[in-house]
Image 1 (cartoon, rainbow, N blue to C red):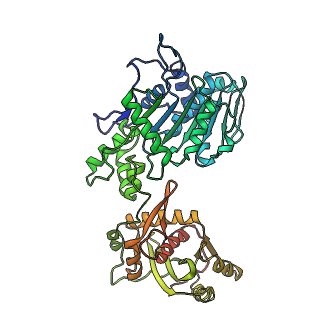
Image 2: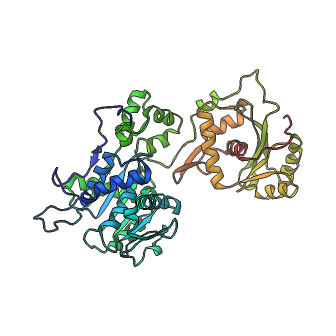
Image 3: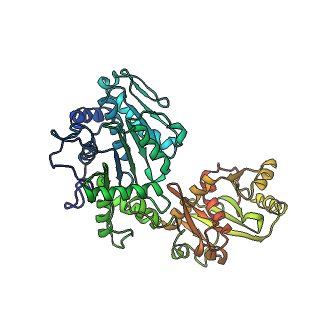
Length: 488
């Protein structure tokens, strides 16, 4: 482990959290701490970090001797918020495994916005079990998809993010990953599943959200109230977050804020220099949300700074590269009011060039097909079309044996991120055409889960040329190599 970058910033406690009843509080995790230390090393060849152990201890604080609830868990709900890549999966998996080991016939339910996300936590718990023979003997089976079941009858199951999947379940521990994406009703269903029974807990771990994250906004308010009233509502809250929701211009301040919002940075586990480089190449809204762990006030923002696009313009004396890997991409506005065709090529040095080939007003599918057949003479690796507006064109191209990529919504998300990265890292060169420059100045992105996409509806102009550009850089990356690629 490297030396922490800022000695005055500790990984634990976070800037905001609900303090324990006493500094020397007891935790239900304490009897298992040594076993977990051994289990993690055996399964993963590393141990839980000290701040993670302290966080787990705080979540599982118990009432002290002499209290009416002595020995019971203090918290009924726990909300943990911190930046990305800080070991959220480790924390959630440790909580799930603790519950299985600590209570006979316990039911642990893992839920997330999608099955893959919930499966990450589940898989980490499964591997911790399988990697330790003594723990493994307590389980009848540990499968990748069908749950963990203990000899004594306890189980860990993944459930879909819908209310019907949770009805009637006597939940001892509900685990939610990426809480900012969960619907409010599902958190209520998990709480209802605990039935008010003692020492049952619903815990969510997340990065910051935006104005659409209704559940997380509610839970933040509950957490702040819990801090203020000493935990009267039995809600544990811990949030690592930067002092402000902006990206500082200087690396010294940015590094300090990253250490505050990311305990893995403060502990020295994460390479701060590499993280700063990563943050500098991301859209500011994403960097603020996912690495400084601050809420966004809106789900929509400019796609990229116009100055970055202008910086990528090709020098006047330069030309579009010849003898390069080439694709053509086409996007149209809904109703085929406008359409744009873009050529994208990669040189042997890895530089990506983008050129607007044509901009058309009210084109028909027949006209676009004729243009594509003309462009096919240049033997591109593929012709990519937008699947929302031009699926019919893609079908007709494929019928003629032309390698065709019909872009989906998930492709649009990937293409948007790839285009942003190429522009921000100066790896894209474009022709400086007025149409794309004008569209880029008003292009707007909107969040799509944890990613983002260029939004037709929210941009202040048509964005067909920009979306065609994004589709082109994706197609260039994923299309199979063509034989006999010719010059353009």
